Length: 277
Image (cartoon, rainbow, N blue to C red; front, side, top):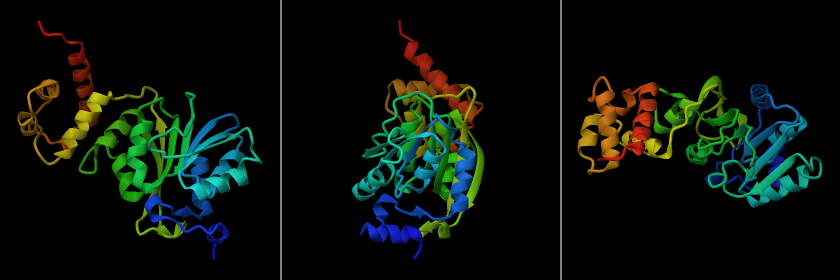
């Protein structure tokens, strides 16, 4: 049995599929994640779902301060017992839901994120994280299909979350991770991806992002038809004005490029400032 399995057995803990508890056991992937994230003494790092604390300990060894959130009560108590005495000033651990607390209790401005992200919460957690303040970088271990969707800023894999992410971050590294790198082995392939925050990140407002999500619900339909079937109101007016600025209103959501989605933000902002006579 691998050391992760032995540790779980000593805790009388069974990995919970509902929580996405697949623990990384490949040290090469761990080293790659640390190399890409490059945590340094004095920096702040956020970790989601630290599990048994293998990655957490490596981050703390770098001299960084780690803010982590773990929802499993058994693993939370084990982390407190194992890591808090050794790094009393650098290790900050919360017991809770990362979707509700995406910044793991970190209240500052500058941080990096390094995490073997539970697959079930990846989109919801990322949406919360991208509402700001934005991390300096994201180094995430994700389900492969999810990673590909997050990185896509054009084509059929593009999604509302990839538009939100692509406006503020640039994916600079990616590496495939097979199921054998985890215990227990998941039934899907994974991918390690590293994003760097852009020098001039574009942040979508809540309203613009809600409109983008709405259009992607109907991603196979022409935008013009979607807008024509909307009830009268501000959202329809915003989308109507935006469509007029596009080269072709017959485009579908998956055919719109990032710069055009960003122009929707500008249309939305202009509408908010406009007061009818």
